[in-house]
Length: 185
Picture 1 (cartoon, one colour):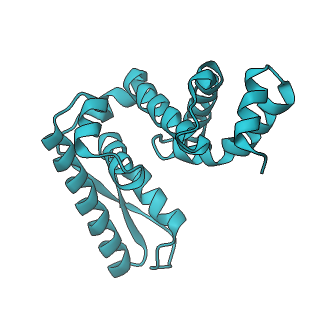
Picture 2 (cartoon, rainbow, N blue to C red):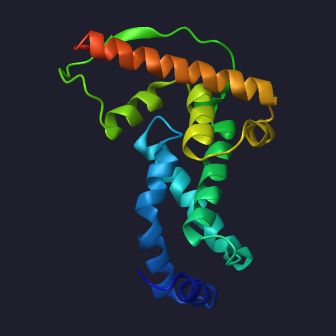
């Protein structure tokens, strides 16, 4: 992997090869970040594209104090949150209240969850739960920070995280007990 500091300098000089290298280095990982906040690959790709536009627009603000990947990740998370807030498709799902969920059939007979299966369960959470769960459990933001990002109280963030966590635990327990069922919204 190229020296990121030199890569940033070359990008700031407008060198297309460096810009392509920066994108190709970080895009696969950042697509995964974007995908965690959406319900479709197309939405994740749209967020990724918007996020990289911002990365290149604000690259001059990057300071070597943080790792470049972490700096880009923060931009992607903020871009994903803005996308969710602005998208009519997700707006109703961002209501932070208790949501009734129902059982759906699943053809997988395996009871052990791997990382991919767990990620899919997280993606089946209602968007509000999914967003807060990802921000807290995956990205490492505090409930105070999440509240500020989403315009909700710290206590709402905490309660939504706990509901999401408990729902995931319930789904995992039910999946283990019912080999052919997974719970979704």
